[in-house]
Amino acid sequence: MSMAEYKGKVKHIQDTPFGYTLSVIGGKWKMVIIYLLAENQPVRFNDLKRQIGAITYKTLSSQLKELEADGLVNRKEYPQVPPKVEYSLTAKAETLLPVLEGLCEWGEKNRSH
Image (cartoon, rainbow, N blue to C red; front, side, top):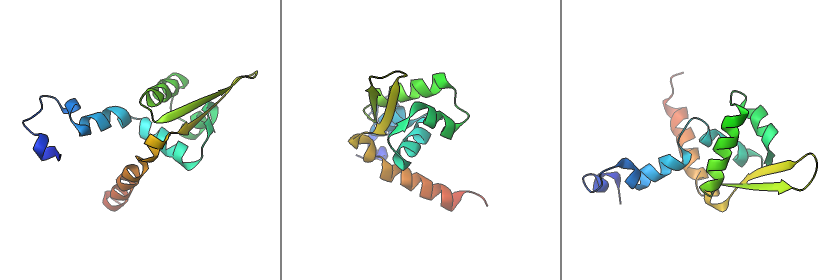
């Protein structure tokens, strides 16, 4: 069903497929995290932090937990000292990559040079 078909049938945007998608990938960091995991996985927490730079440890941890809860990120913990945790994309997240690629292409075509 297209967005136009939903118009008038729902009371809130979050009740639409578009709203669901935004709830899963919306925000400042989630698409960045997905992009970085797609480029080189698995990735350890500190490596993600270094690659992103401007994100706090608390925010990165929170965003990863949300992505994991939404079924987009796998978290693998190794029983060792110090703890080792790796993150990778799920099959569900892999289906999102063409959409993100489309957004990148749109940005490339439309940003002012």
